[in-house]
Image 1: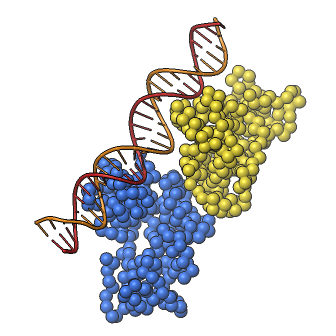
Image 2: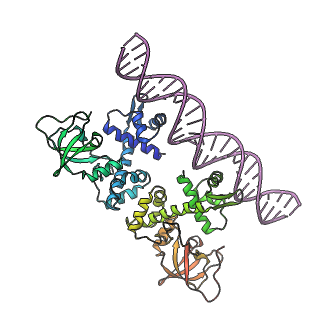
Image 3: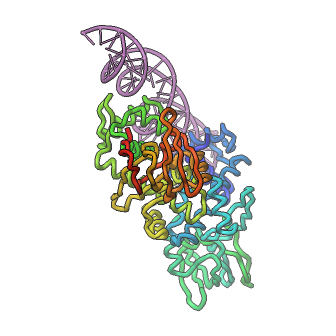
Amino acid sequence: MITETDQNYLKETYALQLEHDHVTTSMLADRVGASAATVTGMLKKLAERQWVAYEPYKGVTLTETGRSIALEVVRHHRLLETYLSKALGIPWDKVHDEAERLEHVISEYLESRIDELLDHPAIDPHGSPIPAHDGSIRESARLHLTDVRAGTDCEIVEVSDRDPGLLARLDRLKLHPGTRLQVLGVEPIDGLITLRVATESLVLGSKTASQVIVRIIKESHHGRVQQHH
Amino acid sequence: MITETDQNYLKETYALQLEHDHVTTSMLADRVGASAATVTGMLKKLAERQWVAYEPYKGVTLTETGRSIALEVVRHHRLLETYLSKALGIPWDKVHDEAERLEHVISEYLESRIDELLDHPAIDPHGSPIPAHDGSIRESARLHLTDVRAGTDCEIVEVSDRDPGLLARLDRLKLHPGTRLQVLGVEPIDGLITLRVATESLVLGSKTASQVIVRIIKESHHGRVQQHH
DNA sequence: TTCGAGATTTAGGTAGTCCGAAATCAATAT
DNA sequence: ATATTGATTTCGGACTACCTAAATCTCGAA
């Protein structure tokens, strides 16, 4: 039997694999909010059940089975976020925490009712793609705002949903998925990024900017886009 | 910290107290789906936390604190059933199981959004009263259809929500909260009850009839209403 | 009033998830 | 090549919720 804990470990492993090519015990410990010792134990269990490939001291990778379990949970999470936002009018900085608990308990039947009612949405309120029922998902390139050169025109594609404070702030600054912006400058030491959004200009710290994923509309002439390390 | 298990034990104890004046270990074991031994252990724990008064070999009673925890869970359950039925169009024989899992994980905030959206409903789809936010609830007299004399006119007030098969059957027979009916006869040995609903007449077994709660509209002349044992 | 039958509790055990502390490993700097 | 450091695993232990089997209690029938 699969528990909520299992689902969370697999879901976070999936999320970490998108951002890093190597997922470690401590990264997972940080995400699931348990000690490294606990995570080691859980990874052994998950490996036994063939949901992850686990190499002690090396790290962890989802198996095909593990990935599809993770995607099912992610689908629940993102459908719920979308539903809570659209149907119940719950603000976007509150939907994540609620969905985090609901995602484990809704039936496949309720999932499909919600999906129909929303007319099979493709993205959630934070711009993240919602996996289809069959587990297919378009994982976009994930270009972080911190990695964009000065002079480039972009559109916000996705913002991290896990920090309500960040979301409330982005909301006040009118930075949402779909928002167009131009990177005016990148301050090299502290990584401060100056943006123009509509007619206003504003400055973001690198912590905030790293949580914003964009796609390029018009490249700067003066150089190439840096890759996210 | 209060767990989902705690909530379930308290909720079922509350439900049993409405139907019986004495709640025993085995009744609770049956409801929560655990062995009697497990229930004994849990009752000791719940008593320690002052949520129930527990007298070994005698039975269990909710304390004031325990009752208000139970009512909070019941409120979640019934609001969710109502929401799933009205907003999502989920049939009434499916809402119970779904609500059973959701009731433990919705926030107070989501609870109040749902309550507002439904315009503070007083009863759920099965006719059960929804406790108010402050824990107040009108617990009606609970007269079972099995205890009504022949010749009496009644209206269905409430039907048990926990057996989907029963609900599907009642639905086919058009027996819902609000339905008017007349008891034509009670067969004394097997307890078969003959009803007239609108222009049709039908026969119910006592198992089914015991799950239907009615209120009397016009008493039979020929005797008094028997009390539920 | 004693005896059972049935209900209940006690005893002993399992599985899952977590912890801190100690031991071990890997990778880097010297 | 080795020592150190930081990450990781191992170890021993805690807690919750569950089980079965055995012991115990309660209460009604004889």
